[in-house]
Amino acid sequence: MLSTPITPATRPDPSSSTRASDQLEKAFLEEMLKYAGPKPSYDGFGGGAGEDQFSSFLTREYAVILSQDLDFGLRVEGAGTE
Picture 1 (cartoon, rainbow, N blue to C red):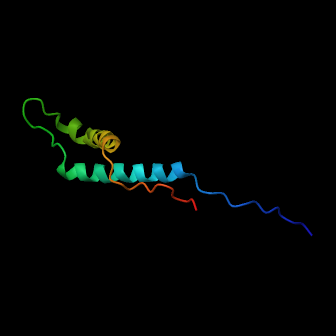
Picture 2 (tube, rainbow, N blue to C red; picture 1 turned 30 degrees about the horizontal axis):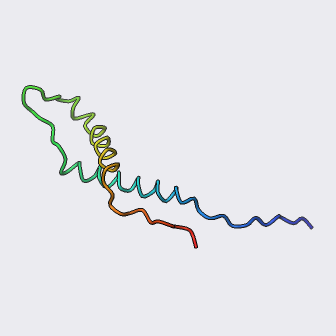
Picture 3 (cartoon, helix red, strand yellow; picture 1 turned 90 degrees about the vertical axis):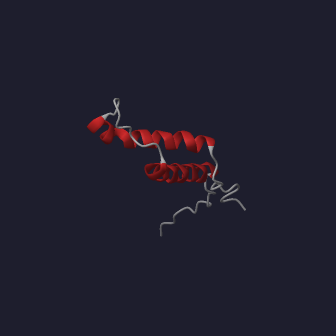
């Protein structure tokens, strides 16, 4: 009969919950900025079709920068520890 060695359970990496909460904050901010963020200008320097195509990249970068400065309190300290 073959036996399989039993490995002890490992605790989740606390930094993984940090990354998940940071990603959630970025996603939230990105969605919020789609509706409430800066709008394209249609005056003399408007970007036309190119601005329409690439504005989502700029919105995503705004969300990344804001998430570094803001803390929504989604991170749970000591998550996964006893």
